[in-house]
Image (cartoon, rainbow, N blue to C red; front, side):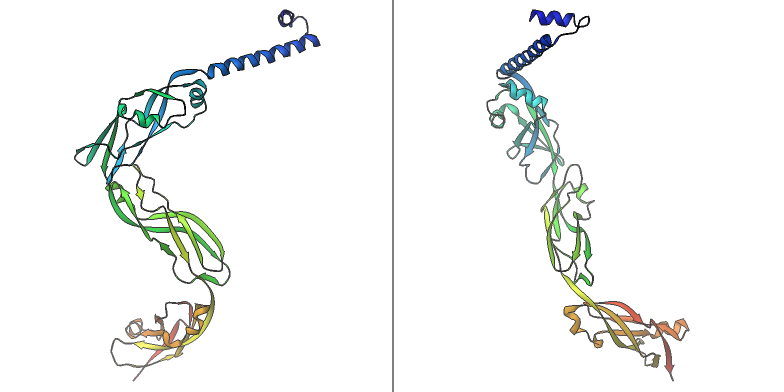
Length: 333
């Protein structure tokens, strides 16, 4: 060992030979192992040290909302093994104590409520949440303060945030159905009064060719304090059908608001191009459609070519085009 130290001191003037280099390596390994063993022995001993814990309130009193938690962090004086104490400090382990506020007494001041908890009465509750082997010696502060306000409820509609892409000739047969289509939102009145709807999570659905059902999570509005939703998700259902196009010839009628008028149009029929689901194709019939010329509008325009209007059609049909869009209108004497 003496030879190695002398070699280190004279290393600048004289290079270390291979034998001394090996001894020096052995020395460093022994030093590291000794330090490690010393550290492990120290860490297995018990120490007293303060640790900060975050308070997580639970069981908020019914009809109230927590708006302020001034004492959200408490300091616990613990007796525990050094390994556990320092690992929590060095490696950022989550230190959390959950406290029930269900039986807390409150004092009302207008629309506000104040509650306190004495930490001296919570020693058993806190100790039960500590790591195995840790002993609770003391808690700071000695009193925890909580402030509440009255909670209000309002039913608010749900909006889907989905993007639909259909395979060719396929589309929605009817509207997207949401269950439930609205949820109860609880919170401060001035906050929930500003919320118009609750969005679902964003979802992209592609190449749809058949009915589709999915459950989507609801996005909680980012407010302070937070609001609470009666449901965290909704069921979304879409009826998907294959569609086709069909042409129908429908006669042009006159709307004269009860006035007896003899008239004629050229042409006397128009062609409707419709999009309809395959299952409804056989239900198509020209008698289900009404196409008119408005007599009052025709007179006012002073033009013998007037637009036609579609005033009646089945709900399961979508009109693609009307040909012609204008007809010649003639009043017969």
